[in-house]
Image 1 (cartoon, rainbow, N blue to C red):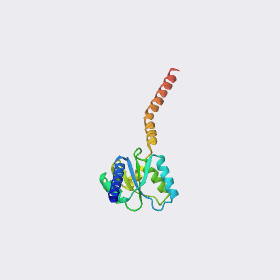
Image 2 (cartoon, rainbow, N blue to C red; image 1 turned 30 degrees about the vertical axis):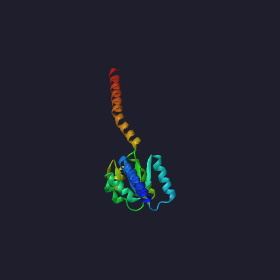
Image 3 (tube, rainbow, N blue to C red; image 1 turned 45 degrees about the horizontal axis):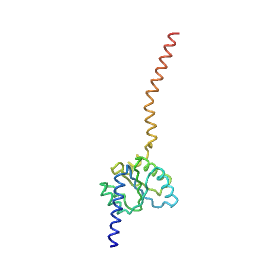
Image 4 (spheres, rainbow, N blue to C red; image 1 turned 180 degrees about the vertical axis):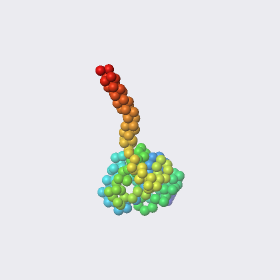
Length: 168
């Protein structure tokens, strides 16, 4: 009877991880070996502040979930002490936060991840980390949209000044 409950709990856990893999915009797999409790607490807080869930699961459970979520290529990274950061809202944030943290804490190693349902390499995660966040992208877009209006205003002003000079 006890074995049946254990199997049920494991199945529930695999289903939970499968759902996270499927519903997350980005999932980043890291090796946290060598990080102190204080460092891990700092990292968890940075991730939580951005709405990112940071979980440690048994690799065997994560591998089963990856297969169920049809992202089994990630299984190569699910070895050793592994934690996974799941983000449902921001594609860039987990990669950016983990990459920045890894720059100052060499014990944190990004191993790979899943970006919008596709398995990503370490290089792709690092490229993603270099992108601006949502607010940064909106700011860039607004700058691009404002440029033609600003240029139009300059041209209109120049024409008005030119006509004033000719009329004077």
